[in-house]
Length: 318
Image (cartoon, rainbow, N blue to C red; front, side, top):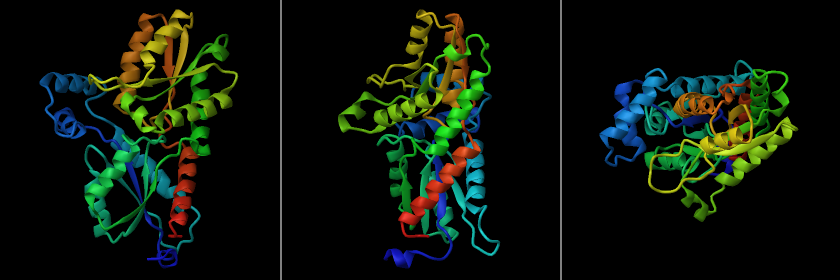
């Protein structure tokens, strides 16, 4: 089929994907089984992760937050269309929990969709992260042609939303120290083995950090990884906990933590930061705050809508 044949008719669907998380404590064990590719999982690990979810309300909010992002994205895509035009439709699928990617693809196909723009709600590409979502799409073998968006770490709307969240969070600190509060940008760690693949993930994180650092200058800033998994292999560092300890040793008594690798609240934010890092900081005599996550910030959503339209256009579908 040529691009000319593809163009015309209704716009393609948009398939928004996110990691997924358990809806209740009883879901933690089967959720972990999926995350771990059904490798044996010790009772100790299940209990530890279950306790983490218990401390953040007994469930993950990632599905409803991603649904809110999808709803906002659909509205942004359709806002300038005439009433008689066929509308964009945005679907949501999860990589490791319900609604699973393969199930949503089947629903899309049953509804008559043959084309979709794929969008993972994570800005930075790695073969182990974004690449794994598109591997799930391929495994599903659905009769839908997917045009993938693989990265958006320098999308102006994303940077605008992040800058807005950082500046708002800095207002929580005393005026006398506000301009000296270090902003610690963070992202999920991955195994160090990705460095042997020339994986772009560390480079893209540096690029986002540099872009945001330039926007908030002369505010001091740094970068660290967080949420490394409990495995024997080495993971990318420095770890955020180590950087918080270093900042405390250097005399800093206020730190703002700003995740750039996540776009909504879930266990890596609500537990790893709001429980563990805040507890660590308090023990060190440090006042630690974090930004509100970008969630469905209008600037990011508008930017993503433009990115979706551009990707559909490059596929010859508009």
